[in-house]
Length: 451
Image (cartoon, rainbow, N blue to C red; front, side, top):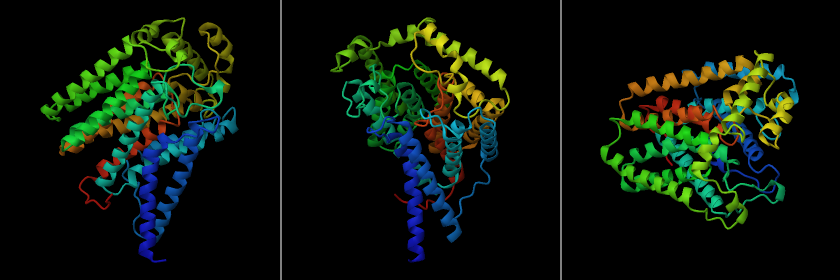
């Protein structure tokens, strides 16, 4: 086989694998399995990382085209986090779960290593600004598709509704291909600010129209998830984005985008005062109203903040008993088992407690304060690096992109105070960290990739 042809095949394999990791993983489901959403995604993630890593290693051995991870500001924090994860697995109260992951959550040591690999791969394997832009556009197209399907579900038409009657959703809250309304909300919090900056970065009316449409559909999908934490987190991230964009975005574009805000407000009014258009009578009875959802936030007897405070209090008790290395990755259900009956009686809950619904507390339970410190080391390093990069960036288009990513990541991290890591959303977050580092790395390089 011609060496140049073999090199071209490897290059193409890398490009396609990167695209699938970022833009296709969120869409993957298996309607013929008991687990529609999570295992198909994590198995696909494992496979793609193995393929991509192999292609990168072979390409490095056959040429001088080796990816460089040196100079990555997250390299040391990621290594520390990986080491803390391995230690918590070694000293786990349920080693098999920590290695392979809980069957419902799939976040064992291999998943954590995959998250770390995603950040490193996307920070060094993207070869041009053109390719990076294509990847982000692909992610936004995926977010549009995920959001549109959520609205279809809300309307009562669910072509992938589970075949097993007991597994069918009892609420008229869409989860789309992400799997759960709360997780879908978390995904959209990460996507909406990026839709907005792509609107401002567009060079023509078609680009602005597509970005505005995507943003409108994503916002509508976020509203019908009826996920209070995601509403709040998105609102805060948009406030931050507004402050960051002062003096950066064109005034005309801001005025145009104001019309989109009015359309979203109209949609909120329709959701609040009109019955959903679902054909299912059960869905009509279970329909939520936005005001009712906000009011129940402060109802201590029906969950909401009462349920969260209960879980956080118990989480702190668990952390005190194994403060340094925690109970082991994905062992939350085992560690929290003693609280199930009390929580069920107090909040009329029939499920199993397997998370504290605060990602930072959940990391501390699984990996101890050592793991939490390592995770915060990654987040702090990234945010400090991004703010400094934003301040020194002279190019307006890149500044817009940095602003959108900073707002998106901050909204996501705020959302994590009320929810936890999940394999249908976390890969996007870790990949985005790596892509952001690539923006800086590629600054000034001539494009080597063409779509």
